[in-house]
Image 1 (cartoon, rainbow, N blue to C red):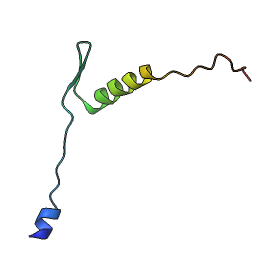
Image 2 (image 1 turned 45 degrees about the horizontal axis):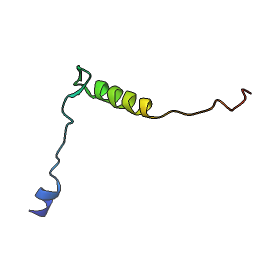
Image 3 (image 1 turned 120 degrees about the vertical axis):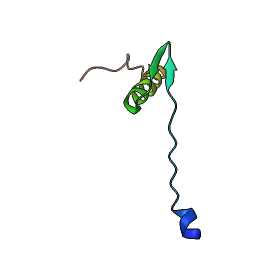
Length: 52
C-alpha cells in the first residue's frame, strides 16, 4: 500500500495566462510571457560605466 501511494505522480498545469488581451496557452507562450514581465521589472543603470 505504501508503494502504491508513493508512486502516484501528479502533474499540475498552469492555466492559460492573459496579459493585455493576449492569451498564452502553450508552455512556450507562458514562458515568454513571464520572461517578458520580469524583464520589464528589471533594469540595470550602466550609464556611468565606460565602454571597454
